[in-house]
Length: 348
Image 1 (tube, helix red, strand yellow):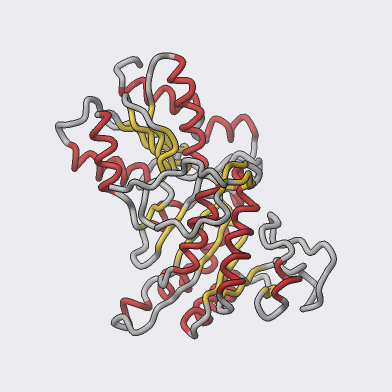
Image 2: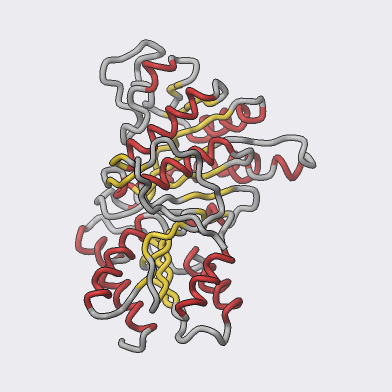
């Protein structure tokens, strides 16, 4: 069972999720010259290698300022071609670099599925372990920002379903920093999914801490009545739900499913078994989802020991609507998590 938590260290500083990602990149790039960045507009778009004042640093500004320190050989603007960017990333990793590539939105990743699924994910297996592909694909995911269907996919389950990929979805700034560092150091390809609603959130981060281990749960809150596990932004939603439940006399434990592959199944089973009630929250559609997989695996291990059926909270099985009221109805919510937790308590 994982014992990793995000409890604040004495020397922690307040960081936004975005700044925690940038700090992880900066730390790794200063420590290892093999770490390089690729992506559209990460060095200023049309700068063509010349430093630009106020370069945008990618769609959300995560790499802003890194070009000025590391230059055009380590912070590379790319053409607008997800397939080309990812193919270059795979080749660079196989040749000995540790590339970190910004694909902007996960909804664009299908354009590069051959490079991700048939090349990066399978190369170690098909070479008998002779070749490793130490690369990170950073992608923004998630709804709620009124970005419509072609910019709001989560794709948690789609990537987790691919053998050979590691899949990470941090929920807090501390997780963002620690897990991005771990992903860069890992010798396998990592898909790093950043929910767009998290970039401006803030939290305590130990800036002197090293990388977190992949394959461990994050424990965001202790509780004794029901265990609620959330993926990415859904974990913060679960924290809000836990506060509502506490006011009604229900003690909810909240876990961050920050590592989807590898998954800390032993940790999940131990914690859900201790409370006897389990709810899993994920923003992806319900069919063949991470929530369904986690519920099935925990249910198999705890059959007969749980006090109630496992609850699942997901999005509806449809593309993400552009209409704000429809998008709100489509997505998970604090109210839906509270309802699911109460149902496991026999109260709904």
